[in-house]
Amino acid sequence: MEKLIYEKSRPGRRAQTLPAPGVPDVKLTDLLPAGQIRKKNPALPEVSELDVVRHFVRLSRLNHSIDTGFYPLGSCTMKYNPKINDAMAALEGFRELHPLQGEDQVQGALELMWQLQQAIAGVVGLPAVSLQPAAGAHGEMTGLLLIRAYFQANNDPARTKVIVPDTAHGTNPATAALAGFQVVEIRSKENGLVDPEALRCVLGPDVAAIMLTNPNTLGLFEEEIQTVQRLVHDAGGLLYYDGANLNAIMGMVRPGDMGFDVCHLNLHKTFSTPHGGGGPGGCAVACRENLEPFLPVPVVARADGRFRFDWDRPQSIGKVKGFYGNFGILVRALTYIRAHGREGLAQVSRDAILNANYLKERLRKNFQLPYGQPCMHEFVLSGIWQKERGVTTTNIAKRILDYGVHAPTVYFPLVVPEAMMIEPTETESRQTLDEFVEIMLNIDQETRETPDLVRGAPHKTPVGRLDEAHAARKPNLRWTPDQ
Ligand SMILES: *Cc1c(COP(=O)(O)O)cnc(C)c1O
Image (cartoon, rainbow, N blue to C red; front, side, top):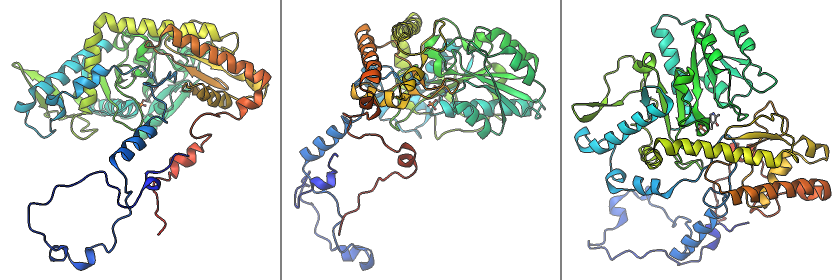
């Protein structure tokens, strides 16, 4: 186990020296009531600056990250975060802003947000954009509140149901339920795609929307999306696009052109801003004109060459977050878009698709591939052949860690038993992909020859198998001094 910083403490060691005070000594008792003055010093670690630096740098290196290793975590688009993004967000004029500064003083920041709104509207083919939500799931919530407000404003409050396919990301049904809708799940066809017949059976005057991602979570493009959108619209419903999988389609096809009415984009996925670790995420929600009046306030608007926050939106659902979105993330996203340009973004998607199909074809002999058609930016394998040898997908995922690679997403989507969902992204080289194939083939061989080695994995990580539910619900975050 790593030592805690407290355990490195040595009496009298210090990380700083303060200059001598330039004011006369005052007695603490003259300033504070005696009862509020501590009798003993607090039990803080006594360490040098070098102790602190080494401790935290060492800790940071115990984590896996996209900057230290391959990260094929399906559905998450763990692509490289170009350092130019950080450099732009760190420019003094952006970094030193205060959210309560007047519009006159922050014209550049407003212009940046306006440009990002325009860029995103162009990428998704929907005209109106809010940059306020902080993550994908938050964007889903915002989008469904727009849909609810829309039907209420149109005197159609009986639309209480939201349809999701059985391949949906868990956040979709969760969001629909949280937004007050009843969730209706439909089964996918044999080939993993939405079944228009199953959809027809549940459509009616009580349906508000369907939530889809395209490509879906199996990495398959919904070829019948035109039929789906016609059916839903004919029944008076709307289509919500979960844009987490946009990395597969940029510059080639747009959610708006597919018939979607509202969508979210995870800026920390497709647009390369940092992802996870509890740091700020970013999300854009885009919609058609008919939903625009309901967007969160304020929206950044331009008039007479000036930019301003438009608060005068009487039908708005209100605010969904403090201030105006995670601004530093917005700077990073626009940097990424501008660095690539329209053709560059299309190339991103083409390369992401190529990398995924390359891995899929090289792995399908050794791991079962339930949906064999060409995939988009990700694909799903099943570990059932290995399970027949007594080694589960959990075991394989843990063994992958021993090779210095992050595990794929496992046991999702739910329609595939022992699922492993692999998304290499476009930023990985042929060499990295080949190394990953070698690792997977090695592990497959281990499941035949030394299955206990795989069952006991991981062997090389700082910690082994954690009780994840317990760790999340009862985290032990506090060191208690023994005194
Ligand atoms: C990641 C993801 C989400 C949720 O996005 P967050 O930014 O993690 O809240 C929703 N749907 C799909 C398909 C995803 O992959």
